[in-house]
Image 1 (spheres, rainbow, N blue to C red):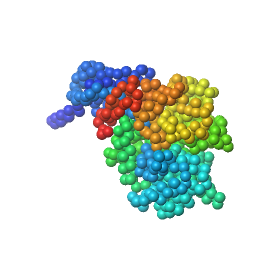
Image 2: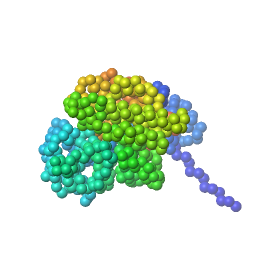
Image 3: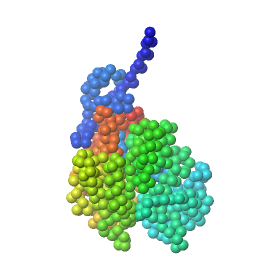
Image 4: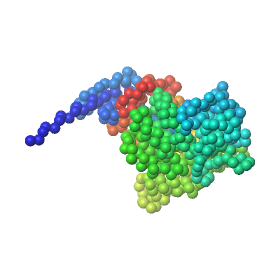
Length: 547
């Protein structure tokens, strides 16, 4: 005789969020408010009028717990698809803040040396580093800004200082030794030499990013983890439920894996492999072997830099810089190498995030995207393109290239833009280096949106002053003729960001099947200025988080 099987445990109760306003929106539908949303086991099962949602739960024979919205406005959790959380948490917030008493970023070698001398560094272990963030990139042109400057005040411990735009770094001699061997693709950046042919200690563009990842991997794990947790709490308080670390490697992915295994990773996180390291396959295998929850930690698009930033004169333009007619910037990835990367992305079904700031780098990115699509269709016939390609920053577009945007939208091009790069701290530099004519075309948000290109909004923190979505939305709404409307700004943080992370099937919307990641606001974000709004509550997977 067979034994009776034990009774199945009762299903977990569902939650119904009601008593306020619930935002429903889609890729092609105008956003509108409804009354309720039902959640079961972390996923949305219904949304709409409250009576209908309750009838649906009864039909599923689910017990129901009510979450009273108290008249508030429930929207999807905010998603930041482009930031550098460990750079900000460790180098900036847990390191030296290289600013003066007025909050301006240091632009004098002696002031940087004095800040290091005052640091009173207490290493957390033998592999620890003295790190800092925020020196003005213009210092790279000063011959006195070198590793000897740091050696004089910090000869015993490795020192690593990131520039304001996080594209340059200065390292002392002890740190330089710890970074060896430092390998990077030819032409992707620079390690300047002094008059004796020795490294000055400056790392420009790709060498800096590779070195920064090495520094993070070398530092004591617990120091990095605690710094991340402090950032994470601030991110949750700001309304973020999902973030993407846009430049990572296997070592940094290992940090995030351990945080998840220790139940310390509360945000959803996408980690983008850094293209010059060719580590995508290794990181994919790393996650597969770890067998962790892929809805909490996953790979983002592979990241390539095409140029630098306007503020460091490395963004690549058709015309010379207004304040330095000897240069128009430079490309850190050749057009041929870029085309090969796009072709490989389609061949291996890898999404790409292409950093392009100047109008020349944007032009080459558009060329490569068009050519890659034609090449793929020529080989495989018409159909959806395997790789999804984003242009990061998209600072400026020539008049000729603006005419191409609608066609590129049909190829699936996405834009990933950071409106708070127009903060006054940056503007005084950008206006000087670009001149008035180019400034008229900086950050063409509305132009991109009118062309049908999804515009994901994000922070690029710490290379921008804030990661708070409401502040960034406010900047997008106040950008003159290139401003977005409120619906476009919300879409930029919701379904367009989900699209940028290939997570649109389950993130970025309040709809059945999507994750129950919510933010409760005190007012209507479609009608009230973001400055009047604040975060009241936040949920991830239906679980309320402390904010």
